[in-house]
Length: 191
Ligand code: SAM
Image (cartoon, rainbow, N blue to C red):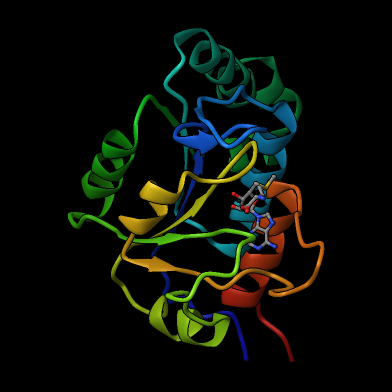
């Protein structure tokens, strides 16, 4: 299969609502590595935008400053390839604004697909998801931080994607690794 040009895929990295260590709902802190690695994977696989959703004002400011460095500051001139990936990032305070950002780009609200390491009955296979996103309709793949996306939020998404290594005793990847593997399974070209 060759990489299809007929994709309109977007990524969201959710810092709220996610689970904390003891299962409570929290807002997590920004991780610089996540911004770099997910932006680069997104650019490599033809993702249209990377929505970083973070409600804490100080954390959102840090995220925006990192992005500014690579998109308009010294970093953009020192490393144009890094700029090309960071240009995909939009830092927002909440999920509704992220969906509106995609509406502004595509004139459609995205179909939402949650990711999780947990085995959930309603999850769709990678095979089905790969077929589904081969479409001009915008699809938003949502990734969590901390101990994963809050269950109520997952329930409100249009689809849930099966976990990588579903059913294994240990399958808790860093979100950066999970994004790269999922993009390759859903949008990767292989011959
Ligand atoms: N225990 C958490 C869970 O059940 O999702 C893992 C949280 S992990 C540190 C952060 C994010 O990476 C998850 O919210 C999910 O988006 C992604 N992730 C991690 N492992 C995954 C897996 N095996 N399959 C799919 N996504 C995964």
